[in-house]
Image (tube, rainbow, N blue to C red):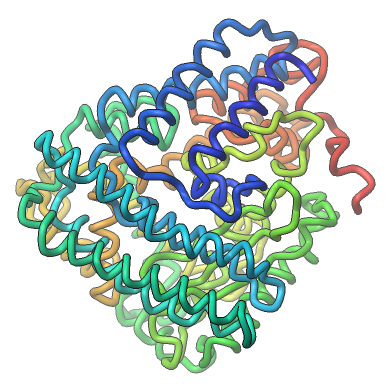
Length: 573
């Protein structure tokens, strides 16, 4: 235990106490019966923890390349948290995919493990829901008194999600059997639902009255989002132009792939035919869950020992179904491995036939070689990474989502999209992520649409144009999903571009390493070294992956990406 690692461990423990919902997402054990206090004083305490720890990092000596990287990762995240707090960036709190309402629901969902559920712990967390919502309301009111209210679409979206959460919580007690525990669970669920009903009414009937219609947050706030989600700084107009170029490239590749399936047919017609093709459909929630579980298991069996070394604890992915709005998502295994890595797949209409031609690429993204491998290896790597590094994937979306998109591209390179429909599904996803770069920057900066695009040229982006763009140019549907995407971009400035910009960083770093090493370049070794570095911002990732690898990171002893597996992984195969 070094002074720096001891500091990182203390910070993780203190952060978990102050933010149990984030701890649940990060897989930190020990706070399972609690929810985050979203009140103003608790938010201030979290900001002060970041300030205090940042000063301690600057005052702590480091030794060797591994500690140099660890200090840089912790310092970058803490400095970003302080900058967000100083700017009041989270004062209005409401957003679409990772705000307090969404974190409360996720914190409850992760404990609901069917027959393996620890019901007393889940009961404690259900009982905490009214208090968490009361604290959130107090913060929202304090911000409103200061003249700051979330945009109307975020207020309305969160009211809707409160109502959706009520439906979910009403069914939770059914799994715990009968008797005293069942009675207590039903009472706790009823109290939580009453609180959700009241909070939804507060949002829609009170806060919405003062909510602004303007969603765009402007370049300064957007750059802060880029720093938060990507760990870099961007020339936003140049990145906007790159997004258009990348979208055009992917669109050409998509058209070529569609022509292999149905020569002469327009792309939208090919996609519609695949949606209705019985060969690419599964009906029923249970059947679909089993199907994606088979995809996850098959990828692990194929890749283990060939392109990657997959530790024993990571050869299981728990695939589960959620009935909320939003995309598929992955939760890393808890640090004590009591919770396996979990893929949550959203089905809004489980009784309808479920198209599957886009699913393999998403499962490669969320499972192996995507997030499950990346974050699972990180969780297990106690030899080279301190506790903060192992558990901080939630804080580095550029690194994490960039790897997920890179994993899809890698599987194409390795020949895993032999079915042309599955490869087209991967490209449709790539097209969507490229469109996000255009829309996320364009909407928040209210940029004009360039000449030559053939889409409302010269007009500035609006949510209505964004919906039209995703529907007509990117083939996204149904309308509810398109609405969700627009709300998502406008609620979290900078997050949506993390996928494509992160993938770009991974690909450029791999190309630089290949040029550097020449004939000695080993892809498997590159991946092992890259994953052993752990999560970090994109600026630091580029620097470390293009550094000349000799005695270790920075040329010092104690190499982070050794040719053998980390000590915590060795012997588990």
